Length: 302
Image (cartoon, rainbow, N blue to C red; front, top):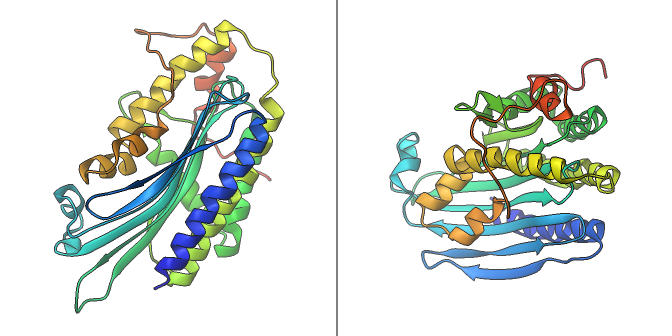
């Protein structure tokens, strides 16, 4: 098993994404915080704050290990009980200043559980999704086209399957609405051999900047005022709700005594909630939920 190759790739992916985002921002750069975990492993958190384009961008690499998984992990996977484990990945969230630039999240990761005298249990996971505040069809189509292109070498059925999984995963049940316009999501991936699964994870990781950066470049200079800013802060509340209530990575990190600063790095610096808010019909704010946050095939006919 090529664990060190996976780790080397993830570290290089963190570096390349940070370099591209810093270049796009043009003013701020990432600070780097290396940390060690007492139970085993560590990581490197990289954060860009108060840039010209990005209010906050966090790109985290972690490689943690332990002798036993938390009960929450083994309850649904009893075959993992009594095994040591390693989990490594790159996870990022980008919160722009301009409300016309979408927030985006991406994650690629590998998990392996081992026990003497038994075959290791391993899988890959990851994906990326887009959360606009003011929707744009061009952005949505380009985003999904890049996701489909990343999946194409692995079979025609891969993009539709992982696109659907993304739509279902990033859904706020208590709000009865999706978090954004989707993308890709996959987990527990071991249906191919190790090399092919690793190759797919790399394809997804490498395609993220190709999908997101052109959207940022197109929208970052769009004029906006306080109305748009306040709506952005309100919609960021949905992002916080999902991450703290549903996100598997956040919950696993907190339950496995992970590093809190790195786990909660995904949260936006500013956010607001408003009681029983409803945008006026016919406004761009209403269009977000009426048109963009719907179960939609953005590449139909393409």
